[in-house]
Structure formats: C-alpha cells, structure tokens
Amino acid sequence: MATDTSSERIEAVTTELRKIAVFADLPADQLAWLAGRFEEIQLSAGEVFVRPAEPVVWLAVIVEGEILWQSAGDPDGPVYTAAAGQVTGLLPYSRLTHSKGIGRAVVPTRMLRLHKDNFPEMLQRIPEIGSRLVAIMADRIRETTRIQTQHEKLMALGKLSAGLAHELNNPAAAAQRAAVSLREALETVRDASIRLARHALSAEQRETILSFEHKAQQYNKLSTVYPLAQSDREDRITAWLEEHQVPEPWKIAAVLADVGIEVPSLESLSREVGEKVISDALIRIASVLTIFRLIGEIESSTWRISDLVRAIKEYSYMDQAALQQVDIHHGIETTLTILGHRLKQGVTVIRDYDINVPPICAHGGELNQIWTNLIDNAIDAMNGNGELRIRTRLNLDRITVEIGDNGPGIPPEIQGRIFDPFFTTKGVGQGTGLGLDIACRIARNHHGNIRVVSTPGDTRFQVDLPIKQPASQASPG
Figure 1 (cartoon, helix red, strand yellow):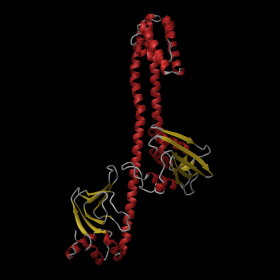
Figure 2: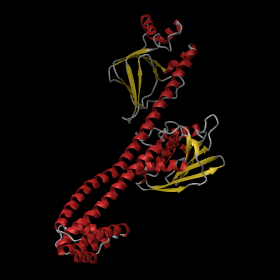
Figure 3: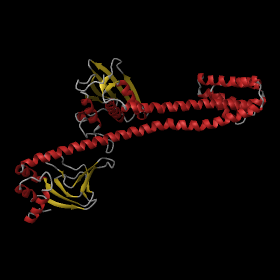
Figure 4: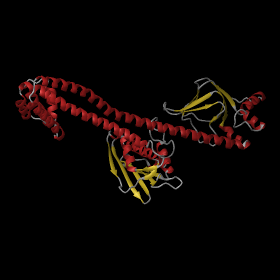
C-alpha cells in the first residue's frame, strides 16, 4: 500500500499519534515525519492480520479496537491482547523475524503501522523514541514471561490434578464397592442369625459356632494363599457343601477357602452343631468373614486417600511459614507420591540418600516445584520406562540433590540452552519451555544453582543448595 503524504492526511495521523503516550510530546516536525510514513489499515471483527511463519515487518499503533495473538497449534495456550492506545508488533532492536502464532481483530479495529525499513532513520531523527520503544519491548517481555510462567504452572497443576484424581479415584471406588458389599453381608448375617435363633441352640452349639468364627479370622490373618492350592481347596469345600445341601455353596466355598479352612474342620463343626444347623451356621460364618474382609478393604482405601491428602498438603506446605526447616528427603518422597501415577507405567526409583543431610532453611513448596519439574522431565525422557535415580550428598555447608535417568540423553548442541526461557524439545502443546527456567530461578532465589551432565543412558541434574540462607532472610529458628 502506498503511503499518502497529503497535508490533510499527515495532519490527521499526527492528531492520532498525539493521543498515544509514546508520541504525545514529540515536536511537530518529528510527528509530521512519522505521520508521513505511517499507513492506516482497518480490520473487521475476526479478521486475521498475521499468520504463523509470516515475516514480522511492521510496528503497529492501535488507534481503535482490540487485537489478540495466540501461539500456533496450542488452542489452550495463553492469549495476548492489545487495545487502543498501545504500541505493538515489531519494535526496534527486537530479534523477532517471523510470527510464531496467529493475530486477529477482536472487534472492528483501526491501526497505524510503520515498516521496519524506516527504523534506522526514525532512530536517527528521533533519538528519544528508541529508549521509549525499548521500554515497551522490555515490558512486553516481562508480561510475556509472566503469562507463560502462569501457563506453565497451570499446565503442571493440571497434570498433577489429573494424576491425583486418578490416584484418589481408585481407593474411593474400592471403598464404595466394599461399602455396598458390606451392606449385603450384614443383611445375610442378620438373616442367618435369625434362622439360628429359631433352632433353639444350646450354649455349647453357640460357643462352637463363635469359636469357629474366631479361629477362621485368625486363619485369615496367618494363612498364605497360593492360587493353585486355593482353587483345589475351594473345589473340595464346594463338593462338601453340596453334599450337605448348603445353599449357594460356591459363595461360601470361596470365602472359606480364602482363609485356609479345610474339609476336616467342616466335618468337625458339622458333628458338633448337627446337620440341621450346619447350613445356617456356615452362612453366618462366611458372612462374618466377608464383613471383616470388607472392613479391611475400606480401612486400606481410606488410609490411601488420607495418605494422598497428607502428601498434597505437605507438597504445598500449606499453613506453614514461607521459610521453614525443610527435610529434603521428605520433600522428594512427597513429590514421588504426588507423581505416583506416572511412576507406575514402568519407572524404577533408585534412592541413594545421605543420612547426614540435615534440614535446610528454604521455601518448601518452591523446592518441591524443582523436584517435580526434574522428575517429570526424567520420566518424559525415558518415555515412562526406565530407572529414576535420586541421590543426595552433604558438601560442607551445602547439599547436592542429583536427579538422573537412563534415557537417551540431551544432545550436546542443546545442553547450553535447556535452561533458557521458552526453549523446549517437546511437541506443540506438550510444554512451554519454562519448567527448567522456573526450577533454575527457584534455585537461584535460594542462593543455589542447577547444572546438568548428560551422556546417552546417563543424564543427571544436580541441584546445589545452601543449608542456611543469608542473615537478611531470617531463619525460622
């Protein structure tokens, strides 16, 4: 598009530029020079003005409306917006060459734009404009980093939440199933007990049944059940129950076989309580054993849920001061619990903890972010199958935590870039390239550092941290 240099147009553009803070106080001759080189474009709502991989050659001033920009191939990624009065697009000294996303107008929008070929003369004619536009670029970098960091944290939180939901669902579902079965077992016990009462049992018969129940519960605690032996035992018990006309013998046989009861014990019980009573006695005994088993399942499931909730609280260090004495080993183990759903795919954890490592003064929740990023990356590097090696060592007044894997390693040509913000080797939508940058910044905030040593089959991230923080960061005592 050719630039209109008519005096009316220059005056109109000059008026528009005076409304923009960056240009508002420039002398009339400088504004006139800029106005003569800016061109105006108008966008309808939803219209695309830049596409992925297109060259970026324009500085843009939004006069009316609003635009948004989003990374290519990442519909859930962060969205950046710019409204009327803002300067955007390519800025002087920027190394941006091609668009990495798509830009479109949110509402009908009017923009003024200046081609980059005018930058050298603009900076020469208007020296102060350079520092102003560099300040805008710095603000944009900070805002982009902030948004990307938030996005990275949300992505990490989403992954942890999905894994925890899965981990919590398993014991919760098991407890729910056990509760339903428990209700059925209690009804069966009640009915069997009523029928036994109608038999007008003697004190000896009642004592015999109760004693058998108690011994069966002890068998359940002590017996080691082998699948083939249990199957054979169940067949023998089923045959005996059928012979004595016990209803639904397959249900009772499975329960009795599980706790190691054999046919001779049933024969002895039958002789003592009588043939008329044995059926209801065994139904009651099997139901009582089932109830105890179900109670154990509910207890185990709720303990698992409680452990996970406790791990979440310890992972985030809720309700604790920002700086505290942190047990590094406990923090790593809590992180492993949180990431347990990923370890189950085929990861073997090898621990080599130095028992001499003392608690360190730190932000516990932040350190757990380091362990999460490093462990998660190690699992990704191994495609979920391999050895995760965790080692700690005390080095005078500092500690070293080493997290390694036996994956393919990091190519030497990119090892120097892996801590750079936004650098990632993962596919689109799988990472923002900020995980290691966040870990590195957390380590630096603790007056520590992170380094990496990598060869095929042996990658090790080493986190070096001081035991005590400087006096200016008061220790929690």
